[in-house]
Image (cartoon, one colour):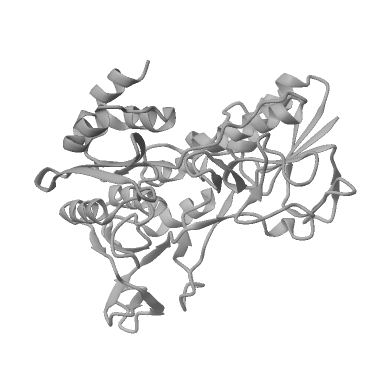
Length: 414
């Protein structure tokens, strides 16, 4: 049996190791195009902040880890998949046969349609090479513009602030982290970041980036609102999309990502998907979704490998969730944080102390939540939502005082 895995990130690494445990005699090949050892993208901001060295991003620290397991690593990009002949086409011109395949190709950053982004000192923060390039320009006191204040952008903001740059964050949305936070929470995070010395501008659209004719800075960032912002470095963090382009013509069903069944198998028999590219069951909505977060990526990689090896392990689905540290202010969102159709909401707000909690109910079940500054409730809220427990009388108590979630959890979870 030959197993092929596309992608050498956390999903692919865990899948390869799981396959080896389940099938000692199989041939296992992991294909990844980046030159470095397998690493975690989630560790890159810590590298940029100077908290770890490059080796700290590596997923496995022994240089012969994969050789010792009999796992072959191919450094190349996949440009096509033929599900009929069971072959991968590589950019090098070679082909690779497989019996079963895992697509764990992850995501790629989105470049917005802004004139002037194809210039030096303008980078995404997605690869180790990106981190090296950003570190080269992001000296203390340099002027840095960060495009995007979503989840990824906010993590990068933290790293750049630690480098003591003069940082301006520009977000098209009317609040920070608009896909994770409501208006109240997003604006509280903005106010907090401004108080920490970061210039945050929401509801602002960048039109173009031009060289600074005065020479006082490298670039001028021109906005639709008429202003100009000087920048020595521009970091683009305007979202990501699943890497599915190379699957065109493969016969695999693609929507936002690779659509999978309850065993993480795609529409093509013997071909599975996991991680950021996987569009699997979202048990909170009952639909298919891509949940591009590392815990889900690792778990789907493990389960897909088990199913590839012949086990029958059902994937129960994932929960949309985010935990974010914005310069020391912790925020979370879980499940249907925007609310369910016909549902009810309850909230508690202490603006002066940056504390906010909002609960979303569907009948007597908790289906979503947002918190700001309530770090003690992180695990409890997830447990209440994932358990789908009938809260009974505790629904009314939580409506009156959302901060009593710990009491509700202890009283209702048996």
